[in-house]
Image 1 (cartoon, helix red, strand yellow):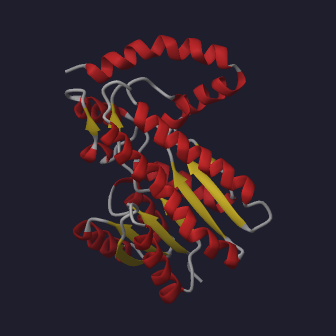
Image 2: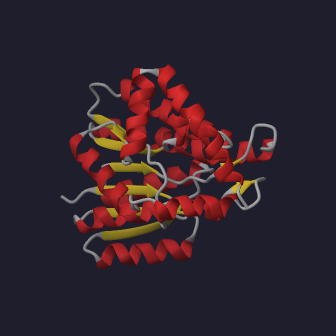
Length: 270
């Protein structure tokens, strides 16, 4: 039987790239998204490349929305093999400039959206005795660059949740995978909130310069799921920095201190 895949925020960006990656393998792929027009178009694209597509309106801010999606997958496909908690948003700003409203907004989607997805689908996967939960985090949750406080915290929360679940799922047959990419071309800045003038353009420039594409990250994720790997760190330079951070925190702090001033200039450049 073909794999059964559910992806939140799967109508665009990395979610769409991953949906098409699985579709090319003949998988049944359900897109859960809040944008019907893009969702229906992605469903058609899945069918065109050899998969079986399904679009369901799904808002990760609503627990019952995810529960309805789970029930639909059980009814149509008898369950699910891969659940990808991908839906997310971005923000930027210092601790004093980021509003509490923006903190609540990003934490509700980036952290609680993932929590809700895990909460809803974990019992089903454990009952099946198989499956993988893929949580999309970011290198921002490991590197913690300045002027990204709320985004960093949200992604660090996803990493902490994933590591905890990875321990809890021992001997259940269910795997956990956490994905921590750095910059690559996507549409993340389309809904970005920030008090820093022009930051969307600056971030877009960094994304455009990346040699890593959404398709590359999608392939890394699909490979990790096949192998049962926990970490997915697609960017070589950032992966090496993370290794340095783990092996020598003092050396990492020195390197990050040197980079922080340059990073802040890049982010605040108009």
